[in-house]
Length: 243
Image (cartoon, rainbow, N blue to C red):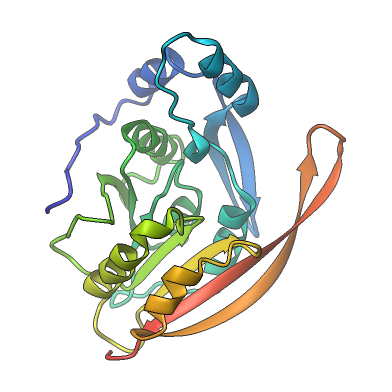
């Protein structure tokens, strides 16, 4: 099945107005090395979830995509080791949420597609593209990687915390194989909490990819205790065996 091409107008104020009617949002400065971006996210995710729970008869869809996760921060840092060139600059971020890692890749010169299945996530990503004046190098696309197929391949496929649910593991492996360019330099770069082992995914992926793992620590501020909380994330680099 082909992914859905959704066209959002390049009107930042209009898109912000749409999102602000549904969520309480604010821009936050996020810095990775020498690059700084303004990223839109929910002001208080826990409060928003509490409000959903209190609404009688409502279908609860938790917007975990609207949060900056430690894995996406570390993936963004890791991408600074990559240098774009005319022959290797096409990137797609899967399950992008608010698009943090893909946006930092775009800010460094890569041509990036921010993809997610959730429509609100794509609006957040589009807002972040426009807010940071990256519309010449980044776009959004609605993609369900468990079933969709795209008419293009990429030099890099990136994603953070996209291993769940395990039932979609084989479909994810097939998507990666089908959309990674067939050359030795192309690779998949995924980040996740170190404790998230995703055994089913890696059981299938090891037959198709050479996989290396690097564990990286990250200290983020705990808003409740006003101190640094340490996270340990894994970065997986995957190159197709048949490339």
